[in-house]
Amino acid sequence: MTAIPSPNIWEDPDGYELENRGVDPEGAVEAAMLRVLGRDGGTPLADHDLLDIGCGTGYHLPRFASMGAKVVGVEPHPPLVTRARARVAEIRDAAVRDRIEVRAGGAQALPLPDRSVDVAHARWAYFFGAGCEPGLAELDRVMRPGSTAFVIDNDATRSTFGGWFTRAWPTYDPLAVERFWRRHGWSAERVDMRWAHATRADLEQVVRLEFAPEAADRILAGHDGTEVNYAVNLWHRSW
Image (spheres, rainbow, N blue to C red):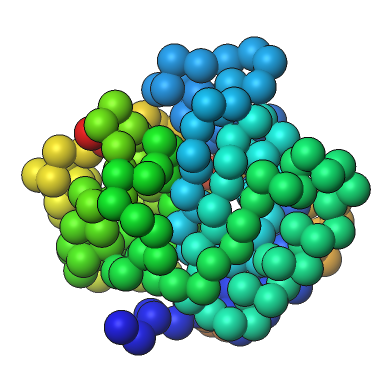
C-alpha cells in the first residue's frame, strides 16, 4: 500500500528535526502518557514492547529505549528509514541501542506479528481522523490484551497555535475529528505544551515548514518572540 506523503518531514527532515527539538520542552505529552499507563519513576517502560508508528528520523526512539522499552520504529519513507537507523547506530549506550529496531513499513500494513505490542505511539503521523481506518484495524491486530495505543494530534479548539491552524485550514473541523475518535472507542487527555525555540530564526523556519507562505507571513507578522503555546489531544485506547 502506497504511503501518504508527509508535507513537512518528507520535504525537509532537517527543518523537522529543528521543530522536534523545540516541541514540548517540559515533556508534558510524555508525562500524560505515563499517567494513562499508571507508570512513573525509574525505567517505567522496562517490561513493554513499544511501537513508534511513523517514527520519521527516529527522534523519539532513544528516549523510549532509555525508559527501558524494547522499541520498534516503523517508517514508510525510505530516506527517513535510513536516517533513523543512522541515529540508532550513533547511540553510545549499547544497552539502549540494542533495544531499538527500525523497520520499513506503514501504518496500514505494520511489519509486526499479531499481538506483539504493549504500547503504540503515533505523534502527528497518519492518524488524523476519518481515512485512517486501515491503520486502526492494524492496531487491533498487533496490540496485546492489556495494551494501550496513543495518538498525538493538534487540538485546534484552543491555544495560539490552534488559532493559527484553524485560520490556515478553515475547512478543518476539529469537532468532527473528535467525534471520529470517540466513535471508535478512544478517549482524550487534553495537554498544554509549547514550542520553545532558541532563536527567532528557528521559529520562523519551523512556521514556514508547517504553513503555506501566505499563512506563515501572516502568523509571523502578528507574533513576536521565539515560542508559542500549543494544545494537543493525547488520544488513547486500551485493548
